[in-house]
Structures are given as structure tokens and as C-alpha cells.
Image 1 (cartoon, rainbow, N blue to C red):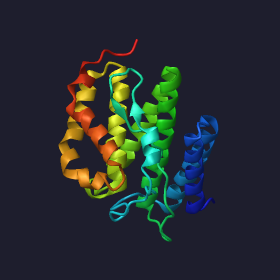
Image 2 (cartoon, rainbow, N blue to C red):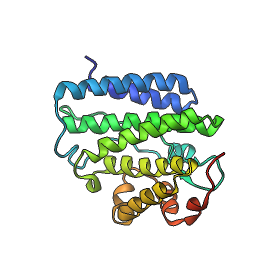
Image 3 (cartoon, rainbow, N blue to C red):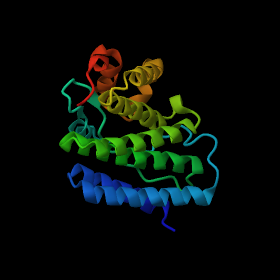
Length: 224
């Protein structure tokens, strides 16, 4: 059985490869990390309760890297995409099953943005569809945890996943669904901005906010 430390090390190595523009090797590491995380969850049992007592599970010492990996969408409409892969810090000695579920969601998110970025490069709908599946799985995990608005890691995952998934749905012409998703984001953005700033740079928060406030994303024609 792979330990939690080893599981997170695989994720962080995958992120390093992602940032080095080696997507195939990054995907291999991330998939290994995901399998290990799921195995740990299965061993510990049912997920319930407060995931991490409000503690942030991420390394976020430097936002310069995040600025390099957060970009606009392929269609040139200025839609801000959060494409910074998540690096985990060393876990607590006794990580709860709830914390493991958050780690699993983070790894899935990294796989999602890996495919999303691949689509930005070559336009293949296969990558976009795969990204959407990963994003929706992240949201399923997030919805199953309590304390969303007070937990910086969960909040980051919820908000950035909704944001990125809205761009995919916009590409597919699902304007009503995009409206619903952005309306959901609007509901708690202003009240949780200070919590988001624990894991995001000011520029990233403003980019996410601009998507919510700007009507131009809803007037975009679907991709051909």
C-alpha cells in the first residue's frame, strides 16, 4: 500500500512535469497518484464530516508560477482560465478520510487542467471532453464535503472548477448551463474573497471575478 506521503509526492512530481510541458509523463504520475489516493480512501472507509478543519493543504509560497499557467481561452474572448496545477504540502501525521477526499479532488483537478491545456494547444474535442469529466468528478467530491465556504482548499477547488467547466460548456453552446454556473459563482464570490486569497493571487481572483461580472462570455458563439 502506497503511503499518503508517496501519493502526494507522485502528484507533485506530476505537477513539475506539467509545468515543464511534458504532458504524457505528467499524466502518468497524476494517474498513479489518483489510484493511490482512492486506495487510501477505500481502506479508511466512508467520507463524512469536516474535511480539514479549515487548514489549507496546498503549497502556495510563490504566485509567479501561477501567473505563468493561468491564461485566457483559445477563442480569444478574454475568458480567464485557472490552469495552475495544485501542489500539496506535507500532510498531517494522521490525515482524516475527509482530507484524503480533498487530496483526491485536487489530483483530479490537475488531470482536468492537463487535458484542458492540451485542448488549448491542438483543439481536439477529445481532450475537452476528458477535462469536463474530471471537472465534474471534482465537483461531486466537493459537494460531498461540509464547510465549503470556510475551507480554502475546498473553496479553491469549487470555484476554479466551476469557472473552467463554464468555459467548456460555453464552447459547446450550453449557454443556459453557463448562466446557471456563473450565477452560482456570483452567490458567494464576494463573501469568500478573503478566503480565496489564501490560495490564489490577487490577479487570479480578479480574473475569476471578471468572468462572473462580464456578460461577453455569454454572448460568445459556440466553437465550430
